[in-house]
Image (cartoon, rainbow, N blue to C red; front, top):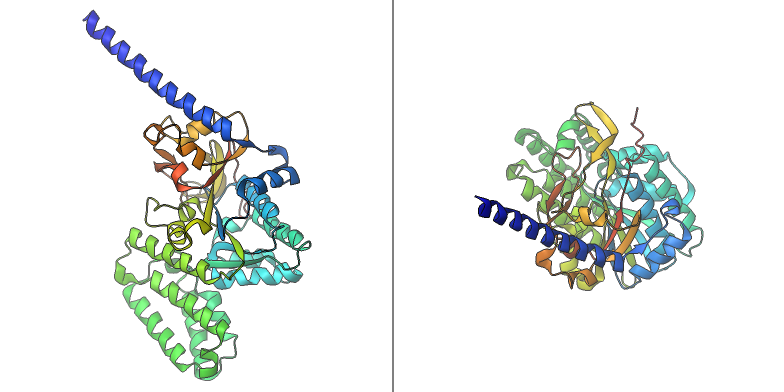
Length: 416
């Protein structure tokens, strides 16, 4: 019995030494490669200069992700990236994971302060944008534009709302029967708010919507049908229909891949020779590899652009985030960001002696060997996440990582 117990103790000690060695090795590598940032002035000029040197200009599309849609510091970090890269006048566009037609209204606000910013953000139908931090980011872009020859502009690359696309078509000069039909279609959608939000139309409702839509487009004046703005809005609306077709049985993985492939297509369609852009979305959309649900936007962009696509993952080890909490029946900002165990990248990132730091991932892929790397990292899906950690290699999925030791929930306009 004593020999048996002695062997167990020896095995435990050996396993502890291996785990400790893995921890020490990865943390040492992180410390060696970390670019430490000033957490008290995150979007300040000094930090922007460090980020500019880290990222450089050798990209066509730079994806800047986030682990959740409800983290205050991630919005400030994105402002820092925009300040860092905005001095490059070949950077012309900022893409948002938001409906294409609705985002166009932001540019009217950027140019002259026209419109109600809160109302514009409400039209996205995505409460993650309805917060003080994103409003501040928009106003920071206005300030960045004051020092540029050509304004940075926003564009949306998502297709989750039909409203503004149809409104734009109606406002393009449509008259007669087509105009009346468009008004009826918009009213019909206004009665299907939950179905739009949940992507769950009945087969009967969807068949009526699709039939009415096709009749309208067939009624359009030939001149209007060839107008580039009208065509863009029709294309975006058709994507909405494609995403919501109940014939696919609402298979989550199928819908996720359709959506990500269409978002990548929309980003690529916005590109122009000699110009660069930044796109802002969730980490899971922008990673270069397929995510846990499907092939990602970043996967499709990397396949098309090769090294012209680069991406940054924003991560956190602890704190809270803002989302809809079913138990509270409201949007709350105290939802816990859980600590990661030794199987997670966050466990090791939290051991670097810096509240916020950035690093390039490729040097860490050399040593320690991939077999010794953690196998999971955090992914906070839309809404309150039951499971916070999923299988994945953070170093393989992103070209750069910006990590916060502690973060807080954003200041939603809906907080009570």
